[in-house]
Image (cartoon, rainbow, N blue to C red; front, side, top):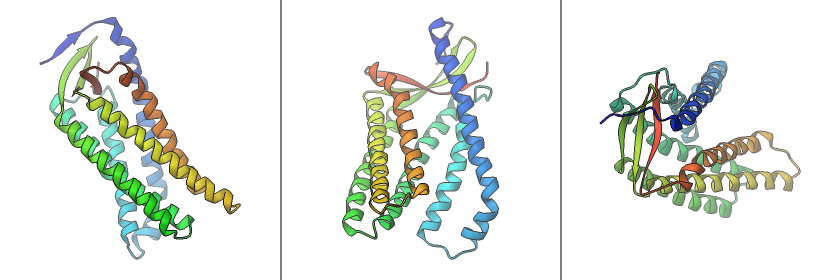
Length: 244
């Protein structure tokens, strides 16, 4: 069922969707540009070398990340028209790509910290236990999100929008995953900074790597906070919008 509305109260949201789409495109272009610049080095240093589990995870994260960036453009750019069925498929795809890519990123983080802490078994066990608990929770919440959500077409002041309707407490659970994720990033940032200070070495690449994840997680929490405050038994989050 298509819902049509010319309510001016939607105009602020429509404007924010357009502005956010600019950042999505800029980030996606940046990821693709970085890949193009470093592809020759990647072939020389990764593809032509002996492969390991880390090699597979690195390449998986890299190329799934590029695909994720492309799908985000399709999902968020308002000039690209998508039907509600296609939008729903993209939503499910992006959601589960996140569930698959995030654990691989965290395994790479754990490996880095394990090396930085001179192969400390206690540190490895500590990180792995937290990683498994958080990953299990994310998988369960994603399964519930897929089961308890549905798509619906909206036409708001001439803007065609595919909205995702969350039933029950799905939004709250989804928000909790971001809170746990942010706590994880803060933890690994602290551990990376602590070992750097302890050994009087500024491991810039590692610290910046963890800091970037903390910044992204905090930004997502800021975006989700209004939805949490007004959450009811059934809430609507608009995921896809297309053309005037």
